[in-house]
Length: 294
Image (cartoon, rainbow, N blue to C red; front, side):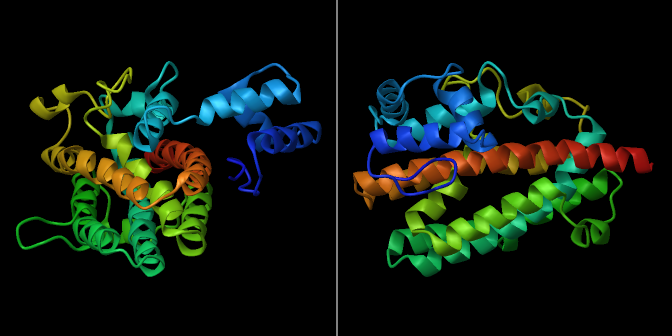
């Protein structure tokens, strides 16, 4: 079991509660924000905090359903992520920011998949990650890679391909990349997959069925002229593919993990989605930067 903020090892929810209270005394922002966001905004004693943490992490319907529910609540719940709101009917500056910043995400993605392969001896894991690397970065004779579709979308909105490829990621994106690199390279393959493939839930077209207030984008944009065809092709690719990708990964993790490993995966997942939250904000920030240059 690990702390979902700093990944420090703990022996039980009781010791996790003690750890959180200690960090709260130091006003550590990460631990304080976790408690405020997921457990309680009011200070509570160790026994109750222990019970609340155990309740939060309890996988009553299995690991996959816990990951999905927690992710949907964080990004599509009562306070949807600002990028989700912007992406319902994306304006050109949002699409430009998306194209440039997501290039860096996808470059890290294939590296992370490679690290996961290196850490696993399981055929289903290796096959799954090879499929991911191929579809995201290289493509096939039948279809361009997701990365190529991203570049075409950027070009359709006035960006130069070389400018995208030579750009430097914004600080939030760089920090996220560093965490994902660390997690996939140095932790177990299960934790690496939890860090990365849970993020594909962002484009899962079942989000509304899972309780989200919004989907990744308003489907009506696919039938209107408000976004260009290149943007439709890019969004459609992820929208159609990521249901099977994300949920299949969670099934693979659960198949090869005991309870302790799944608890570790929960902690890494929680840390990963906070980096992902900030990375999605960087898409908006990049859009503003590009807009102001024009």
